[in-house]
Length: 272
Image 1 (tube, helix red, strand yellow):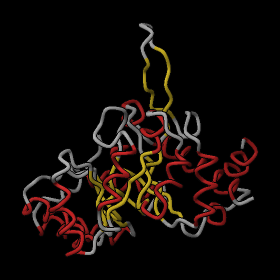
Image 2 (image 1 turned 180 degrees about the vertical axis):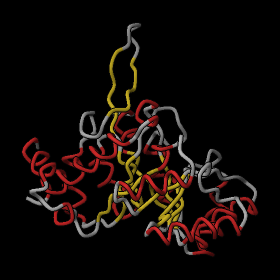
Image 3 (image 1 turned 45 degrees about the vertical axis):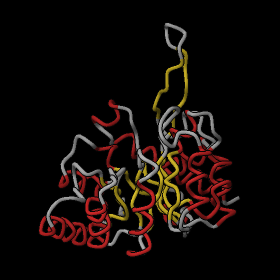
Image 4 (image 1 turned 135 degrees about the horizontal axis):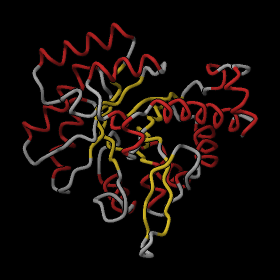
């Protein structure tokens, strides 16, 4: 691993050649939540990331059509794609949920990342999935959250349209005690997005467990296994760098740069 990272840093290995044809590296902008829309655009361009997953404070799915198209034009001019967005709030009100699908249609997003708190919302959401032919990806947080238990996620998938799938947050899944590679295999072809983050659990001074969000490759996530599973399945999607660490969010440059190197090293290692 160290040798691969060194070669990448020296430019002796091509980033393009190391990346699997079907897997792209992206940015979940919660990582840069202190930035404005324009600052995120500049940040993505500077780091050569074209696939961006926006949070609503930067690109609001319930904003005006005019504002959406204005920002979409900026993304197009810079060669960027709002490939998905979220985690988006949903409700029991069809007209509110429809705004998410109309926004996705305008920006060209094929997936919407969601985390419905009320299971009754799925009936109305499924109707819109079928109408718009746009996928929904269930995001998981940690233990105690709505979809922190994978049995809950699997229960939704079993009963719903195939276009309702998963946004696998590797960091939170790991913190909840799951193996990311096994989850990826369990969900099969229903994984529509991946949040590329790392976490580990340590004991605090009071003896209680503390979940720490750390740099990619330094936590407990089974990325060796996950990338092997991705390669075997020929999964084609985006792994969006994300962090919940406030220190990283204050200046995400190093996190993203090192995350890119880690991604390429994993791709190269999985290719052997």
